[in-house]
Image (cartoon, rainbow, N blue to C red):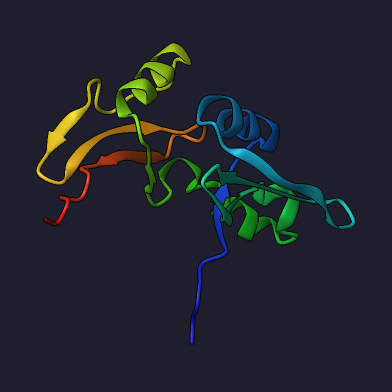
Length: 140
């Protein structure tokens, strides 16, 4: 049946602000920015080490012709399901987030049995969890 995940949609109020956040703050790459139909912008970003999974920065008021559907989508912008991102250096990531003025839900990195993590809010106010996994033990 399903063989892969290709896109994850993130509703945003302003695609330009979201693009700036994902590229300049989080270090994502702009993958695609073009027209998907008259007046419809298709804008995606990818993690540097995972270009096959794209996050669509989707403005509901542009895409949904039905005003009720657009309003419903916009009503959840600040409470979308949490995204989880992996980093190789969570301490550097925390410093970068603080310097960028990102709203942190955990002001410091948490040490957990499986690794380390922190939680913060993206440009929409939705939660993101960033994790640094413990290295797998080397078999002898």
